Image (cartoon, rainbow, N blue to C red):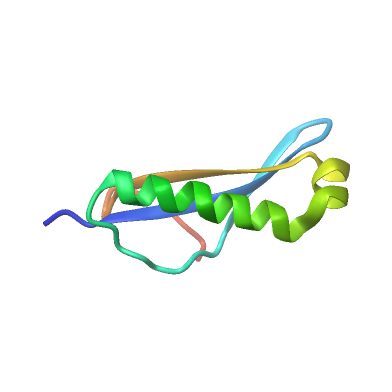
Length: 77
């Protein structure tokens, strides 16, 4: 069975776009669907935690990638 991992980045779009990979729990998903649903709910939770003021000030947003284990980006985690 294929294992799917999620990689999440926090980005700011001010004069340039800068994204930093953020540490996430090492969760294995059975398919891309489950990973994607988790990615959107996790992203919404992060944005709520930062709050309206910081999100607006730094133009914060998240992005994520669901990919098969062993094919993901090189990480610093």
